[in-house]
Image (tube, rainbow, N blue to C red):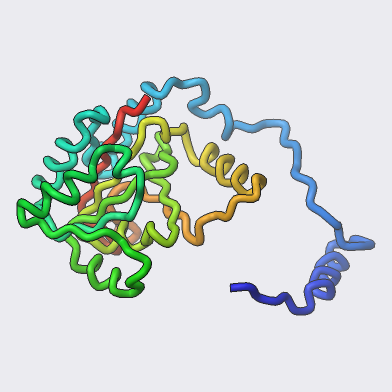
Length: 239
C-alpha cells in the first residue's frame, strides 16, 4: 500500500527552527564514532567457536539445541517431531526444505504415520491462521542467527507466515551453521546492506530467543506467555 505524506516540509522546518538551524538538512551524515565496541565483541571467531557460544546460550534460554549434518537432518527432524508429540504441524512454504532433503519426510513419511502436516499457503489467506492456531508444532528456518543471545532472526514474506513461529505450542527452528553471526550488530549490518542494495525488506522481522517468557512480575520466570512453550533449534552443519 502506498500512502501520502502531508505537511512534511512545514513539520521538518518547525523541528529545525527549534534546533536553531537556519535550514533543514538535506541528508543525514552518519557519525564517525571513535569507539565501536559493538563490532569488536566476539570478533574473529570461527563458526565452530560461534556455535559453541550459541549452544551454551541455549541452556540459559530453555531451548533444546541439536546439531546434525545435512545427511542426517531428516532423521533428526523426525525424532524431534516424535519427541514433541507429533502433529498437527504447520511449516513455512520454503524451497530450502527441499534443498535440505526434508520433502520426502514432510510429503510422505509423516502422512503415512497419520501425522497431520500443513504448509503455509498464501493463496488460502486467513485459512492458514485457523490451521496454525491448532498446530502442535510450527517449523521455520532462521535467516540470521545471533550466537551471543541465542536468537533466530526470521524474515516474513507471503510464504513465510509470521504466526508459524508463535501460535503453535512448540516451535522447531532450523538453523544453518553458516547463518550464525556474533550478535545483533552483524544482523543490523546485513539488514542495512539489503536496503542499500535496493532489496525489499520483509514487512516483519522477528528476533526469537527461545520460548516466549516473562519475568517482569516479581521477577518470576513464566514460560509460554505469548508464544511457544517449547523451543528446539536444529543446527545444520552446512559448512
